[in-house]
Length: 114
Ligand code: 5GP
Ligand code: ZN
Image (spheres, helix red, strand yellow):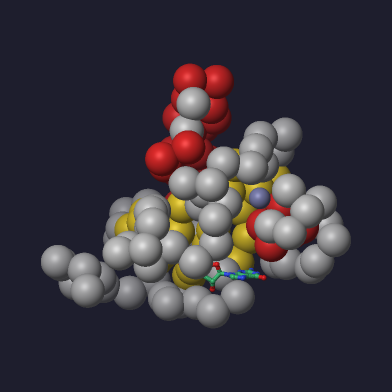
């Protein structure tokens, strides 16, 4: 998608701090971190949001959580814990319309979220 910022990051048209990449998924640091560790786990396929997932994407979404586990080891936060967030639509504050999973760690998070 030409005007999608995350597609442009995936295509290396704009720089990002990539911490993991394979054929299906890229993980890079959020530009405006909300925690000491704030990564974005992004399927490379342009899917706008959870609302647009189709059956062909299901296996990649499973892989997202496998990558999250790998990333939690890499950043040594498996034991202390982390939070994964997917904002969907206006009320959740989704700003980038390319499905992404926030991986947040390095501090304690409150519940319920704001
Ligand atoms: P959303 O609100 O859509 O769930 O989250 C979008 C996230 O993408 C925000 O946390 C924002 O800081 C991050 N973001 C937006 N533009 C860029 C960018 O150009 N580079 C990086 N690394 N992160 C971005
Ligand atoms: Zn995109």
